[in-house]
Image (cartoon, rainbow over the protein chains, first blue to last red):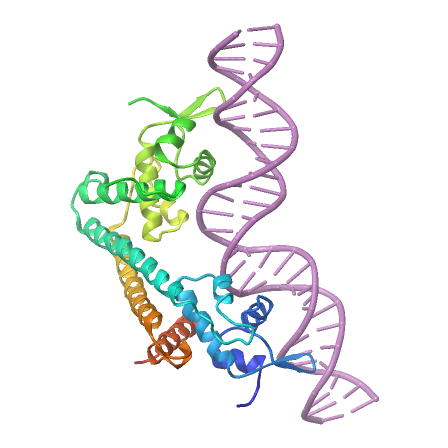
Length: 142
Length: 142
DNA sequence: CTGCCAGTTCAGGTGAACTTGAGGTCAAGC
DNA sequence: GCTTGACCTCAAGTTCACCTGAACTGGCAG
């Protein structure tokens, strides 16, 4: 496996050089050395980048993702963390699904104003209720 | 219906006073007057706040939400916009579902490193591929 | 040897959605 | 009448994930 410089890495990964530098500064990736001033990366960085992309899509912050790499750059992922994120995603998905259905309904609902549509108002209440207990961190009793 | 001052509105709506002021500045809500210095709001603002919360959960930005109110504060929502957002949500949901399933698998997968798990690598590839064409705005041919 | 050009560092900017802090004001209670 | 405390304004700060620009450096072509 041969080393790649930042331009090549940017090209094959699709990640802009500026972002690669930013990631290195944040400790998400590591350059294996320099050729002159130029960073040189091991090809395994591609895996790390893919992992970063994955983590982002899953909703992890860059800081959280950084914590998932060992000093060697190999992923050290706690499985409970993954399960927890999966559960979180599940909740998000449920919420978004309700939202999508509500939007679909509202889109074809014939009430003169959306405010007069029951489904729409139910959604509105749900959304504001969610915010209320998101503010103080507790869910009201059902 | 009686008017409410900002403290009361904050209490019943769960939205901090600072946020209410911010929303007013952004044109999302309107105070009906002042009592001394204090803002006084019409109770209908509660509906607007609920609508804002709804829009946010649906993924609209505050600017987009602002555009959904007429000058009178009554919602003027283009139905096509709702349908479009519903479609967008649909795509998001699909993506997140795949992610959730992948995470669940990875959480109980017994491969020594996640990098050696097929499912995990498939997810990784999907995530980086998605980013690549998100960067230049086109989806590769299937 | 010289000059080019793609890389480098470092400071600062972006935008979204708010929050915080300093200093000012006013209606109400004593 | 004076104090108090909640609200006011305006500027600036915060977080996240980057991007931009200016000034600089070094390998390589000629």
